[in-house]
Structures are given as C-alpha cells and as structure tokens.
Amino acid sequence: MIQRELRKLILPLLGPALLLHAVFFLLPVLNAFYYSTTSWSGLTPEKEFVGLANFVRAFNDHTFIMALENVVYFSVLGFVFVFPLSLLFAVVLSRKPPFERLLKFIIFAPTLLSVVVTAVLWGSIYNPVIGLLNETLRAIGLGELAQPWLGRRGLALPAITAAMIWQGLGVYVILFLAGLQKIPRSFYESAELDGADAWQQFRYVTVPLLWDVVQILVVLWIIGSVQAFALIFVITRGYPNVTEVIGTYMYWAGFQGQSIGYASAMGVIMFFMVLFASLLFKWLTRREAVEY
Amino acid sequence: MAMTHTPGPLKAITVLLLGFYCVSSAVSLAWVLYTSFKSNAEFFASTWALPSTWRWSNYAYAWANAEIGHYFFNTLYISVVSTAGIVLLAAMAAYVLARIVFPFRQFLFYLFLAGMMVPGMLYLFPLFVQMRNMHLTNSHFGLITLYIVTGLPFSIFVLTGFFRTLPTEMEEAALIDGASPWRMFWTIMLPLAKPGLVTVSIFSFINTWNEFFWSLILLRSGKLYTLARGLQTLFWNMSTESRWTELFAGLVIVMLPLIVVFILLQDRITEGLTVGAVKG
View 1 (cartoon, rainbow over the protein chains, first blue to last red):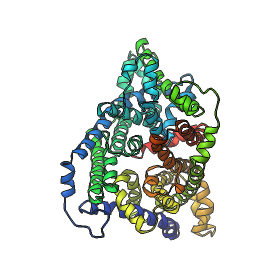
View 2 (view 1 turned 60 degrees about the horizontal axis):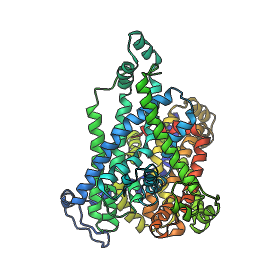
View 3 (view 1 turned 180 degrees about the vertical axis):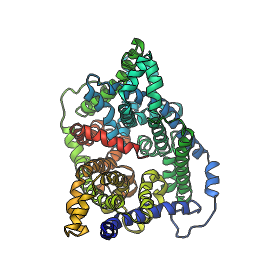
View 4 (view 1 turned 135 degrees about the horizontal axis):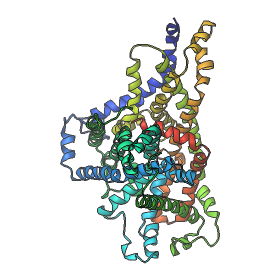
C-alpha cells in the first residue's frame, strides 16, 4: 500500500537526474565507441566507417607506445613509493603522534588543492632557472647536480611521479587509517601474549587484515595513472613532450591533430585498460582477503 | 595500537623519512607564500631570500590586472549553483533508488555509478561535439550543467546509502496521516537526510571549485574563466611575461579559501574522503 503511494514519486524525483545522466553521460559514452570506428576529423559532417583501423594505428604509433610506457612507469614507480609511504603515515597517525593536527594538515591539504595548483607549484620547483630545487642544490654546494628536471625523459618521469605522489598521498593515508582503526585491539594483545614482537605483529596481524585496503589502493592508483592528464598537461604547457601520457596525446590528437576518430579510439583503449586492471587485480587477490 | 614497541633503528628511519617529507612539503608551501610578497627583481636575484619589504601590491596586481578577482567570482557563482543543483537532484534520485521498490531499480543505480568508473577522457570528444551543437560550449550554463552531471554519481551513491538507514515508520506515519507522497518527501524525508546533504555539499563544492578538465574543454573566452583555468593560463604566460611573484600571489589566493575550509572542517572532510576513495 505504502509502496504503491510512493511509486508516484519515481518519475518526478528520479526523472531529472536520469535525463541529464542519459543525455550528457550515456549518450556520449556510446558515441565514443562509435567514433572510435570512424576516421572522422571533426570538421566534416560525414563519418567514414574504418573498423578497427584506429586501434591498429595506435599500436603502430611510436608516440602512443611511448605514452603507454609512461603510464606503466607512473603506475609502477608511483606505487612503489605511495604504498609504503602512506602505510607508514597511517601507522604513525593512528598512534596519536605529537603535532597530530599539523601532520594531518601537511598530508591532506595537497589532496584538496586543485590539480592546477599542484602543477604550478611543482612546475615552479622544477624550473631550471628560478626553481626551488636547483637553487637549493646550488645553495648547499651541489650546484653541479642542478638539472633541467623536465627536459630529459629519464629525469622528467620521476620528477612528475613525485608531484603525483604529493597530490595523491592523502587519500591513501586516509584509506589505510580507516583500515587500521577497524582492526580490534585484542588481536594485537593476543599476538603479544603469544610472544610476537612489533615486526611480527605488523607482518602477521596488520598486513593481512589490511589486504582489502591494499586491493582498493592498487586499483585506485592504476586508474589514476591511466587517466593522468591535467597535472602533466599544465606542467608541460600542453606541448608534445617526453612525458606524454595517453590523456595528453589524445587531447592533442583530437583538438590539434583534427582526428576525433583516432582520439576516441585512444579513449576506448584507456577505458579497457582501467576495466582490465580493476578486474585483473580483483581476480588476483580474491582469495587473500581475511574475514574477521 | 600496532608496533607499540618499535625497535630503535626502524623508528629512526620512519621519523627521518616522514620528517623529510613533511618538512620539504611545508617549506615548499612557505616558499610560495613569502615569494608572493617579493618583487620580481628580488626573486630573480635570489630564489630563497625573504622579501625585503612585504609587497601587498603583488596581490592587488594578481587580483585586478591578472583578473584573479574576476575568476574568483566566476568560480564562486559556478560552484554555488552547481553544488545546489547536484545536491537537489541527487537527493531526489537517491530517495527513489533507496526507498521505493520498482523494476530495474538496481540497474538504474549501477547506471549512475558507472559515471564514477568511466574515465572522462573516454567520452570527451563526443560530449564536446554534442555540446557545441547544443550551443553549450563557452558558456557558464553549459559548464554548470556538466558539473551537475559529473557530480551526480558520487552524491547519489552517498545519499542512497544514507536514505537506506532511515526508519520506514516515518513514511508510513506521514502517509497514513493523509500527507501526499510529494509533501512527505520534501517536509519529512529531505530534512532527515541533512547530515548526508551537508557532506555531499562540501564535497561537491570543493570539487567544482577545483575543477579544471571540463573548464579547459568548454571555456574559450577569458572573461568566463574559472580560477583553475585562469591560473593555468597565467602559468603558461610566465614563459613570456616572467611576473612570477604575482603568479605566486594568485596561487595563494586560489589556495587560501580551501585551506581555511580544511582547517574549519578537517574531521568531516577526512571522513568524506574515506567514502570518496572507496568508490572505485
């Protein structure tokens, strides 16, 4: 009876959101798959069907392959640092350290800042002439180490990874912190009674019980790296360069290169990478989670 | 908690590592802050030195000449309207998805959630073409529409969870007393969801305030720019203009409101970030 009355609300309450979602999300998503099979430049009305030609072109395109390599680089290198650093910070914060609020501020504030702020800040730090990094090296007598940090690929990739870590760390610390707070104290007490030292407690209690959090963290980091765009785009002033990622390359292909079809195909590849990474990781770690 | 008796060397390494991170992070932010008061001549003479006099005129320049002030009010307007739109539409949709049993309910819920999983890069070009045909590019109205659409999935996700926790007796009592379902929603259920609405509002506001990607795609004329878009243009112009200290003043103006919001709402924001992060 109640439900029958309530059903009168479905259309007026759900309708507006659903309409907007359909027109500005579902429709363009479907069109993206369609465009990716055409050679459309974006300038002419007719869209010629070319099948999978755009995808073949991508995997024979040196710039695209480099962008792909860079994405893998960001995922792996960033992960190697983000994971231990955020876990350490979370463990420290969970033990109510001195200056707790100040620490939280330093860790979480970058997460809340616009990606443009991060890009401008790090772009200024790495600036070869006036940048904080080179000036500091010169000031402490290590002037010969001063570099054009964003100029060479071997330096630019880790330099940009550092900025990505700085920006993203807060979210991972919060995730670990929430996970740590869910572990019952009694687990550590019984481990201690059994004679486990601090390292063993960490290894055999904390790590297995945080496994769910680790799964989420890995997937989030991969998705973030695959979609990377704004930070690199702003730091490198939108020019094609050695730190090209899929995002920046497809933006260039679509808006400057006048090939919407090709750019859409790259977007589709990006979509499947995100989907595949998420599913693969869920599958790989499916038996490891501990119920408690 | 864990590691109550951390061995000495391990503890020393941890303190050193985290200390280095925190100090360099804090120093970089302090550097931006005090450099924003220097003259460009002083800045080029020494990157590290403190300003000889504290030049507030850099802020006046950034605010007026570099039009940060103009972008500030554009951003404020866009963020307020978008946030109101997101919260209103999401609350309405979330109520239906959480409390009413009907066919395809679960399917529609996941259809909205897909908006959080799919990279914006995938549908960027079709969306741009479509909005150009609808005359929604280079307009605040178009940008606000897009902010509402991209903000809905997360807000619907959070609010659906929130509405599910409310007791069913409230609806029954109201309907038996003869209230229409429509009035019952607006006068009873919506006010009950207030804590959820506040969380969602804070997040929608921060997200739209910071948003860069869609403003880059949609906005062409400078007078329409948001802070993020304006700051990016200012930064790109540095290669020819070299007004670095004014740029830093602009950077501080953009950062300051969020830092104030963060200090005031620290606990609520960390709590909300947890929800937001698990969405993937």
